[in-house]
Structures are given as structure tokens and as C-alpha cells.
Amino acid sequence: MASALAHDLTWDLDSIFPGITSPEFENALAEFVADTFSLIGNISTLTERDVAKFDTLATELCRVLDNALLIEAFLDCLLSADSFAAEPQRAAGRFSLGRAELDKAIVAFTAWVGSIDAVALLAISELARDHEYAIAKAQESARRLMTSEAEAVSADLAVSGRIAWAKLYSNVTSQIQVRVEGIAEAMPVSAIRGFASHAEASVRRSAYTAELAAWKENAVPIAAALNSIKGASITICRHRGWHSPLDVALFNSNIDRATLDAMLGAAEDAFPMFRRYLRAKAKMLGTPKLAFYDLFAPLADPGDTWSYANAERFVSKQFDSFSKRMGDLAREAYSKRWIDVLPRRGKRDGAFCQPVRNDESRIMMNFKPSYNQVSTLAHELGHAYHNVCLNGRTALQRDTPMTLAETASTFCEVVVRQAALDAVGEVEQLAILEAGLQGATQIVVDISARFRFERAVIERRAETELTADDFVELMLDAQRQTYGDGLDPDWLHGYMWAAKPHYYGADFYNFPYMFGMLFGLGLYAEYEAHPERFVERYDKLLSRTGMADAATLAADFGIDVRSKAFWQASLAQIGKDVDRFCALAEK
Image (cartoon, rainbow, N blue to C red; front, top):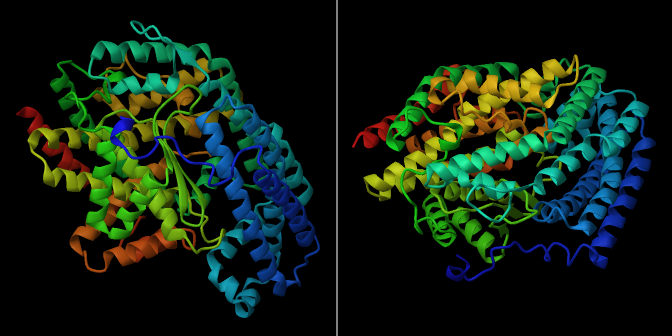
């Protein structure tokens, strides 16, 4: 695969810092810690009468946040690529202590903003007017804060509590080695999960069985991590006056309960549509019902069609069809080695895009030849394009919620898929539709299952700790509710809670992905209906995702996110793909 490319398939981190032990990194870390303590000292002297000091303190806070992002990006990339590396582990521990102090500074700044007269501030400060939404959010957050002493203790305990448990999860899962029947060499679980797209059902089944056995063997520390992280979240929410972590997630996502209920209600109504696709796929594979390990089964051997080299060329070409700026971003990511491509021992599973500084990003993948992975490349480059559009905004203005953070990534997936469908024959169309429906099923059906699981865990964890078996049964029950007769009930994935790292970070990470995909589909429909000036308006929306709530930004495109009809219309677009897939499958 590498020989077809003019660049390395590992990412370049040296352009961020020359190395983890370099003077540049050491100086940056020391400067960050010193600036954070200085910031805390400056904020601690403020009173509600110091309205005129907003500009100075907000500017200083944004500068420290930018420095924290750069250091955190470097460490996250190093640790995601190699969890065995000792020096990054130690440096991450030192950074966590400084990050805890920065969290205290943010809380103190939020409390101060909550204490001042916002009307008076907006009247005297242009910088404040540029940050009006952030100020409004800060004032609501301030209303929910504990005492300053309690918030400081909470930040300190997070280092040896929530953060330590998340680190344990990451280390344990990235170092699991799995043996699959018929394959001599043990492999990381990320590579084993890659067998889900293998052409042979026996290989998929063996890998699935081995994966579940590995999760079961390691379930005790993983369950302990999940219990502790969710328990801490519930406790903090209660002391801050929130009813549930879900309410915090909605607030942080810049949406309300009416929006969530409309979207989830429309998704539930669409479950039968997705089950129809799953039954059609089962028929093509020659099995009565799909097992969970068949969800990503290819309908034809992809061969070299979707090698990584071909994926790069294909994605940048389709990005060009939308805008040169988007195509240029893809080519820059390739040429400057922003992407780490292949799975290996110690490397974290999955894919992500990490903002670094200005318009620069890093992308991690675990690429195996399939159109689904081409779509993943487009998705992560979509995040990178979003970062380009955010360039020039302050750290407070760039604070994009997950709901809107998934907009550009989903939109890019649609751009690539729609262009591909228009350019290929029926056999290739079937493969592309299959890849798109795989993804849509994950985002609507599987994420609905994961949301229901997490909601049930939060409810149960408020009363007692859960065992690993409890987590398994809650996950299986959620999958039965959502997949229904689309999957064989004897072959579900009860350890999805262990396989998904998001549960060990943000609460209710799941529904924003659904919002992003369906909102992206709604925007693409607007693009098709009114292409004139769309790119300019779209780029502006992406540049403002941290400066207004989702309903306000959507209204600029005539979209009402609180209306179930909008979500149903987006899902109806997926329904057309299901119809097209089923018709081609019959042939």
C-alpha cells in the first residue's frame, strides 16, 4: 500500500514539537503551567465591579487555552499511536496536573462572568459583544457552580479519579492481544475488530467470538472504570443542581430536550426501514438473519479498488466538486502527513481528528481496504475542514459542541457518496450504498441502542454499582429494542460498552453523532435545492458553531430542529437509499 504513495502513512508530530523530551516541549509545558497559575491569580482578585477587565482576562484565558490545546494534541496523538510509550505517559501525568489548574481557572472565570452585569459589559466591550453567546452560557453555568472551594477540590480529585480511570481504560484496551482461530499471531483488539469487514463469514465469526472472549476476560477493570466515571459524573451533577448528566450533555450540546425528543422519536419511527435493509443484506449473504458480526460484511471482495492510495485520490477529487478550498485541505493533509493510517500494536482503535493550532489538524485511522474506510477518511477530513473554517476565532468562539462538530464530517461523507453514486455502474453503486447504509444504521440504530444503554446505566448507577454482567445485559436489551428482527438475537454484541471509548470520556457522546448526520443531510438537501452562494453560507455556519445554539444556526437555513418533520425528512433521504439498495439487491 505504501509504495503507491509519495509520503509516509504515519503522521508527522515533529512539526508540533521535536519530541517528548525536547526543550521545546519542556518549555511549552512549563510556560503553560506558569501562565495558568498567573491566570488564576489574576482572576482571584476580580469582583463584580471589575467589568472593564473582561477584555484583558478573556484574551489571557484564550491564549492559555490555545497553549493547552497544542500540548494536549501532541500528547493525545503520541498516546493514541503507542500506549506503551513511557515518556508520553509521564508527560501526560504532568500535563493533567496543569490542566486541572486550568479547569479551576475556567470555573473561576465562569463564576466571575456570572457575577457581573452582562448588559453593562456588552455596552462597553466590543470583545464581549463578539463573545455574547459564550457570556450567556457562562452566566448559566455560573448559576450551577458549587462553591469555589468545592469546585477546586473537584478539579483536583479528577486527576486521580475520572481522568485516571479513563487512562486505565485506554491503557488496558489498547494493550489487549487477541488470538483468532486459524491465525497464529496474536493481534491488538483494534485489528481484530477490523475482521468485521472480512469477506469470509467464518473469519468474521471467529474474530467476533475471540473479541467477545477478550472483552470478557478484561471486563472487571473496564467495568470498574465505567462505574467510577459514571458515578463521579452523577455526583457532580447532583451537587451542581442538574437533574441528570443528560441535562448537562444537552446544555453542552447547545440543544434542548424538545430537539432531542423530536430527533429520537423520528429515529425510532425509522427503525423498520433500517431492518428492511438488514434483511435484504442477509438475503444477499445467504443467511436467514444477520449476526452482529455480519453488519460490516462486504457484499463483494473490494480487492485493491479501495486501497488507501485510491482513497486519497477519490476523496480529494470529490471534495473539489464541492469547493476548491475543501479539496486543497485534503491535499494539504496528505502532503504534510497529518494522517496516521494503519493499525498496529499499542495503537488505539477507531478514528479521530485532533485540532492542533490555527487551521492545522491530525487524523488517526485504522485503515483496511473498503469503501466504509473511504467514508471514514472523508469524515475525519470533514472535521479538519471545520477546523480550517474556525481559524481566526478565539478559543471561546471555537468551543463547538459535539452536535455541530459532526456537521462538517457528515456533510463530507455525503459529498463523497453522492458523487460516487453518480459516477459508477450498478455493481459499484451497490457497494457504495451498502457502505452508506452501514454507517447510517450505526448512527441511527446502533447509536439509539448506545443512548438507551447509557441512559439505563445512569439511572441504575445512581442507586448502586453495576457488575460487568449487568452492563452486558443492559447493552443486549438496548440492541434488542433497536435492531429488532433485523439481527439474530443470539448473535448480538453485549460488550459494546467495553469496545466504545467514548463512554469513558464525555457523558452521552452518542446522540450528537445522530444529530450531525441528520443535520448534515438536511444541509445537503438545501445545497442541492439552492446551490447558489451555499458554500459561502456553509463555511460561515461552520465558523460560528461555537457562537450560537443549534436552533439559531439552523434557522439561517430555514431549518427547525425542534420539528420532528425535519428529522423525518432527513431520514427519508436514507429511505431512498434503502429502496435503491433493495432494488439492486434483487437483481
